Length: 387
Ligand SMILES: NC(=O)C1=CN([C@@H]2O[C@H](COP(=O)(O)OP(=O)(O)OC[C@H]3O[C@@H](n4cnc5c(N)ncnc54)[C@H](OP(=O)(O)O)[C@@H]3O)[C@@H](O)[C@H]2O)C=CC1
Ligand SMILES: O=C1OC[C@@H](O)[C@H](O)[C@H]1O
Image (tube, rainbow, N blue to C red; front, side):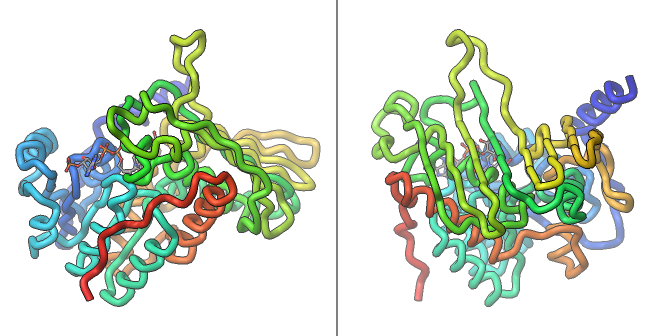
């Protein structure tokens, strides 16, 4: 009963988060590039409960679209181009939720303008672009974070803590999945090669990240890689190169500590009987020589999750929604991520971080799969930074 009440209360607050009381500290002013679908969940709602952050501006390719978005979300400033928003000296931080193939260009421009950037995953189309963005952030002395939000939640911290405690012994295998059904429409940016589409880029970047994060081991080689392709109908009219875009992917890696890593991602699992969408698969299993951890929903754990640990002939289930000294049960992964981002910008300690090396390694792993499966690394941006 208490877990049902907890579920209802958490999910009510996720939809309508309590508003923060203002503090003396000057809030960071965020500007959003694009009236993106993900922006309300990933930034606008989390900001409401953060006393030191506001969403101040939004830009879209059409000013009307930006204005409609601003009205819905009560955002003060509206711009009809991304560059105008970057030119606004009142904007401290940029949230970049553009299609993957535009991450590099607009993050580089934002960093060049001296803004801190919260950048959607995957960081860019190529590892080289990811490296260049972090180098510019270092030069400009600003913060850049690839938004692997799930890692900031206490459930992810607990999974890692159990692995590192040695309770399940040496990690021998890790399997991470992210598969959905019935969410994506034809013409989605995820089905577009030029925009950095592909299951491996979208869902797969999380599965690779979680495989690396939970096991504490890095890929040394891709041992097998299979995929299903996007159809012309899914890609949408006139969209080129759809035969280079994976709708799903199943990959096995050899990992640095000797474990086998398996990832599985799907942007659109076939519906049951062709009609009923399947339940998402958001699970992870970490198997050691002394035990096993099975995680249900490592990606959006605030909604619900379970961490089942088998070791020493016993089994227990853990659920963790807050840290002892940080968070609330209804804080989403995005809210925990925002906490760290604001703290980093303000020069304070953070409870978790994803650094340059980590982001570059993730992009390298994605690239290694696209090389192995023959689809080819996503196209590098044709935008060239001014000399
Ligand atoms: N952290 C998370 O949980 C999630 C992260 N993501 C990531 O966020 C990013 C955006 O995803 P999502 O919000 O679903 O995307 P949308 O389909 O909503 O697109 C985002 C924005 O891209 C802009 N855009 C600019 N150029 C183009 C173009 N040529 N074609 C289409 N759109 C264009 C549009 O801006 P405009 O308004 O200016 O027209 C649009 O608002 C991706 O990188 C994705 O991987 C996505 C979902 C969840
Ligand atoms: O980042 C993401 O997480 C949730 C998914 O539905 C979405 O496609 C992806 O971009």
